Amino acid sequence: MIKSIRHFLEMIRFSHTVFALPFALLSAALAWRLPDSPFEWRELGGILLCMVFARSAAMSFNRIVDRRFDAENPRTAKRHIPAGLLSVTAAVIFTLLCSAAFVASTLMFLPNPWPLRLSVPVLAFLLGYSYAKRFTNWCHYWLSAALMLAPLAAWIAIRGTVELPPVLLAAVVFFWVGGFDILYACQDAEYDRGKGLHSLPARWGIATALRMAAVSHLITVAALFALWHFAGLGPVFFVGLLFVTTLLAYEHWLVRPDDLSRVNAAFFQVNAVISLGLLGLGLADLWWTNVR
Image 1: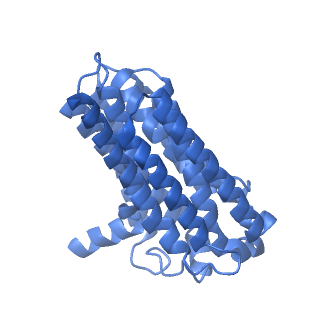
Image 2: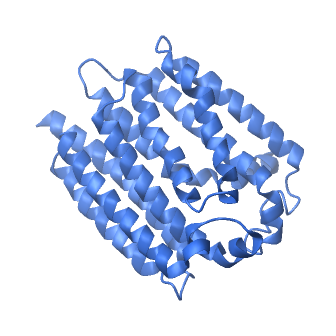
């Protein structure tokens, strides 16, 4: 039983939850500081459950849809379905359960009806990403749009509206994730090209794709500065901006057209520090503002 649970958590890369969850929590923290939106444990629990179940459903669905390509690609052949560690049936059941749990978790935000109303369209968009590589070179930004929904959804769940702070935070996520997914896709450029799959590295080559990723991350930094300004954040978060800018520059130093050996370090380690660091410094900034 424990071994099976471990296989499911490994299949969905549960540790990669750190890419979107911190931004949902930061968005919620910004909403909770407003006088008419006091903190509620129920809302925090709902955000955590929705994030975990939605992402788990999307990742499991992706592994089901891509199982044939995963089996043929040497880099992914050891993933759980092609390696026989998990059956397709088990993955389908897991996806259905997580999808149902996600929709059910939105009930925690009632009487606000919007999380429940939007749950199925959001889930469909998240699952739809798995087909993006089959028809668009811009698939990286479908993924980033999916993760971008995290801060928007958290704000809507708490306040029932869309306002400037979550939009700016969503822009940060959109361009940040799009950029680092381009870096990650460089590993499979030749394979994707040979199989007729789409990506920016496969379409325009690794060197051009890396430049596009760099531009995406420059926009990320600009969006962060806009968030700092328009959300009325203070000096602690400003330090976070400098911290993120430095890490993004380091990420692009790690990955070069003739050396992709450090892509995984850039993909997970650096980006996990960015997301968790921004959450930590954002919360510290809000605390500092309150005690001044």
